[in-house]
Image (cartoon, rainbow, N blue to C red):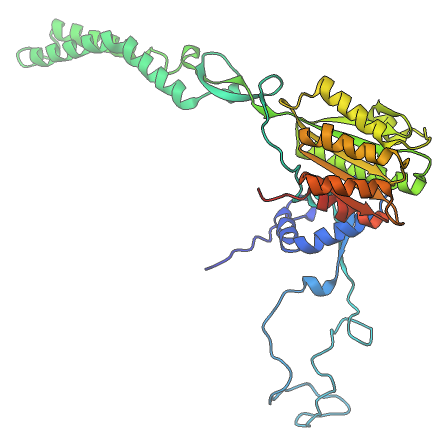
Length: 420
């Protein structure tokens, strides 16, 4: 089978075809480079592009060639030391050098570096991710519409003209309007043919019939080939589009035990979640809840930038989430998700309350609940109580984040596509 490689360049000396082929071929290396790049990013530039570096040895194409060894005869030009016919010893480590490198081991070639655009970077980052257990609990027809074909119309924009339908109508109109003239023309031609058998060409009746035939042909030709009346346009009408309603609750611990490093990790996790949801799903609502001893529903700006802090009562956030679900998001209509970030430092008597709240009032009604504990130390009471929830519910997941480098693998583990 022949394969044709298109190496033609697009504008500005770039080749989109070659770029797409390169990205497909080195997809695994690029994904690893994207993961490494995310680990060192700040909150502000999390959605920018990135320069990706791939080792040069990974982009070299395999080729067939002569290997070292064997008996060969080569002819080289002579110099001051050698002349044609001299025999030379094989140099040591023949065939292992790179040729262009300067280091001792021959690995002196620079890595291949190129820059991913913002869209390409985010596509790689959120590849193979999805909200688990997303089901159509209720199909709504309230918000979204899609345009569907609905026959033809006599009015529209030039871009929507249906050429075939318009020409078909014009041809039908011409046949209908010219039908009487064609019948008269046929009768006149038959009469002229019969008259010419008995009368000369200059006979007055012959001349009259010829004039009548010419007049009828002119009448037929005067029927317009196409008129605005014949134009037909493709008609499209909005049709309600059934969609699935989903809401994501983002619960973040901002208590005093969450130092700036932990808060920064939590914010980066939620920013990734926010970017993922807004890119992957057209219609999904987000509810932001911050809590210390008291939980509050806040907007996006307050969630990521407010500096309010205090003690820790995690159950306040779960109770507020439960109240919001009952007031605004009936479980029969909504797919409900939640992601909670905390350092696990909770008031001792409150952790069992959190467990009971989850098991009795939240987990039976949510599609998925993800908990991340941001700590490099030993787990505390909240983690222990949440383990009981994880054992009871398959739709509960918990992971630990120790350093910023853990954000990417933990995020992908929590929201990876699962086989039904």
